[in-house]
Image 1: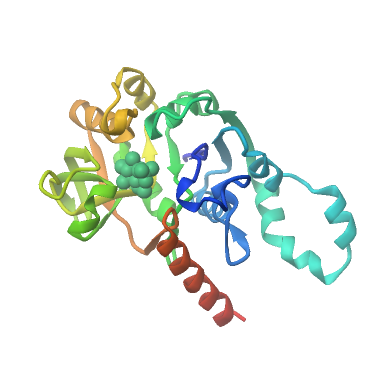
Image 2: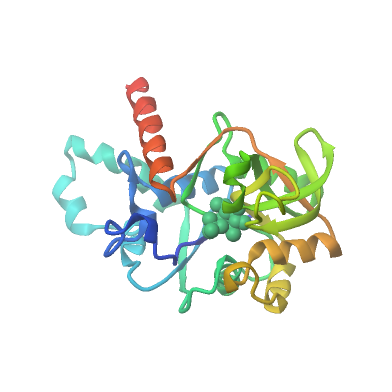
Length: 275
Ligand code: G1P
């Protein structure tokens, strides 16, 4: 029912310098697959076939990754190496990819607003590729799409985080209306532990209704002088309803070196188990 998924991918990836000096952080691999490909697979599993990517300068490798590489394909055609391309070929067959560039880095809210031209007036998913999620039997975005189908409002994914981590996230407060599903009453972007309204942190998965674009246009810069999606969602929650969903599965913060290594070990083990 939701066809489109937006990937904000214009950031510099400074925490991974020098690796990200000439290479987008979104193509850094966990084992042998770029981070963004895991995200696109998750979107597709949720039925989102139209992939909209907000890029920036120096991100051409992203577009090339989701395109045919004639020379390479010609070289390995008919050999057993073709099997390595099976997953990415399937994505390319089943998805469309469109791109727009964010010219200035003015925050996640601004990146999402930049994507409006690719999304239009329909509900859409948002995946931050550096939050890598393994939903076990069911992808996190697919879980969220089911919540959207029932309630028809914006949905954010949340998880409990320890107090000393809370200031890295948007944090919600709300009332639990179903097991693991909260109606949001407050949201704060990167609060200090004292300011945090709970230990429920937003992770990089959203389903947004398109009125969010109008709200974002009116949202002043917030934390860090940037336009924050968290602030826009709080406005939406006050006008309407926004839900926070405690997803089932495991998430790795691949925006940090420690999380990246943890994910690498986890997926490597899994690959070995699968043979
Ligand atoms: C962004 C959001 C934040 C959210 C986080 C999830 O922050 O602004 O609300 O909790 O993603 O990863 P960033 O990590 O881009 O600083």
